[in-house]
Image 1 (cartoon, rainbow, N blue to C red):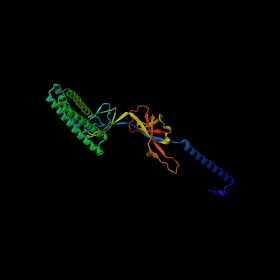
Image 2: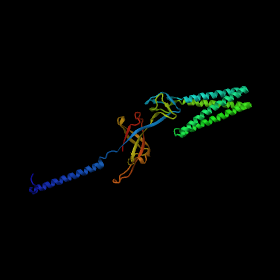
Image 3: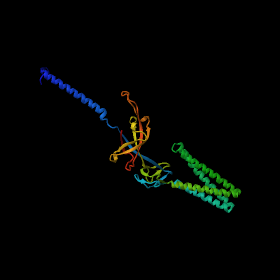
Image 4: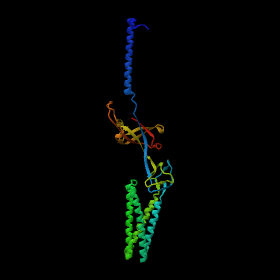
Length: 337
């Protein structure tokens, strides 16, 4: 390679011209790259969300054993369909007790109408004994509930319900005793009225227990799909225990967790374009109806060196504007800002 010092003036001038042109080209290319990076090739911000649906938890109204499950996970059901049978021996025992009290009340009423004093007195005594038995049973139930409540196992509401049942039994026992005392005193006209009232009370008790027996069969509160079934046939379940979860398939929405700097284009009432990869990358629209701050635990903390600010995360919910039967809870939904 010839030494630059040995080149002719014309050659030196030509080399300087080429180097200057090369430098200009490099500067222009660099400027174009910077401009393109800043303005021309800015990528879309992708915000990922997922589909959700309302889940209705179905719980047992009585303690007992699961006798039959009439549905399986994934089954579609209609409102009113029978889902499960939970047999409760407690409800059976209460029915026998209530029917016994009803029989005694009716018998007393018949004897009062017949005017047989000795029989009236005996019937009043029998009814009083029935009431005392009911009072004893409800007292034991209330004591057990109180113990469980003190241990933190039973809710206050259930303890109060047991207390109310015990108080009602005490009142019924007191009323039955009064009827017995009146029978011994020979208050015929008052006996007849009271006996008729006791029959009504007994009938009400039977109706209440029969309603409990109907609660052994749990039905679907709405149309939907069975999502999860918790117990198996033969298992014991407690009062209020979850039996299964029902998804209201028609009530669907999309949830996004969005940093606040991206909320400018996600305002209440706005329709946004979204894409669902699981449905063949289907594009559709969804209308935003809910925006809520997720709190300090979902804050993006800025570092001091960048000079940026803390950015909060917001929960944004939007409903599809068209029916999407194949959209399932948990499916990914994409929004490009």
